[in-house]
Length: 339
Image 1 (cartoon, rainbow, N blue to C red):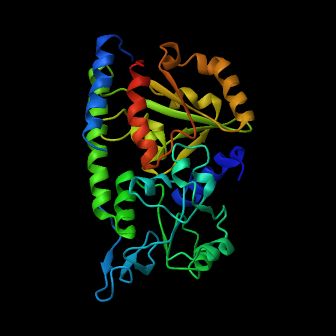
Image 2 (image 1 turned 45 degrees about the horizontal axis):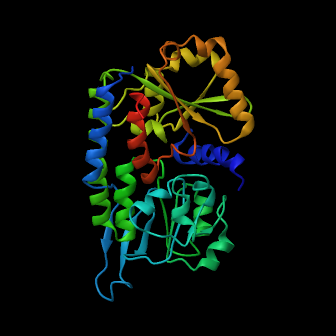
């Protein structure tokens, strides 16, 4: 799949799975960034789905009964060796040290985790059943709730549906169960949350108040403007100890939406104290975003006038575990305007 079409793929997949789709300088900034780096030297929700191991046989042949995201009870291997992961958060597997045999390549093209999956085969979007058969998987993790597709894919190998738009904790915990990596998932999450807490402390110490709000925007071709909610960069911004969503973004979060398409005129109603722009992949959308930034509505926003606007590449600000680690390093630099 071409990179220009990646954002459309993400939006389509999100719609299927979610049901919708002040700065301080000088020494304070240096100290704040240092706190995060120090925490990082120390190391890198509980699942509602059940997994019950079956006794007998070798560990490689052992199976467990697993209830997946959409309610299927599936007999899956406890130590799968040939995994196909078809979803948007492929980088989660790298955090657990798992190398899948098949992935949705468009989910990693141009991202921070692309090199981690250079040996994996592309099973396409939509899911290519013939390619999956060639890969001879012993487990397929399918990030979609479409029952018709599931029925076809499940004929290839044991298949479980998986909510790739769940929280980081939910995803890693469930993947740990499915992949025989429970301890790795636990250790990774503990280290991550230590780093995340240090990041927010650094940002608070740098002068960003506890009640300050933030909004993430991006553009899709055709002047389609989106305010992001329960996906990507927003998930870390609105995490415990983080920045607050504006009321309209909170409504989207409460509704379980990944994003909301809005008109340019609605920008002031969605805009927070800090604005994050995700640079699109598509060239036309990049130009349209630049035009938006030149307009009166955008330039009239208080955050813009105060210089509280931060830009990240769309492909850098994914929801997966590796992207979240990267964002922990980058957010203090952006918000505190430090290098």
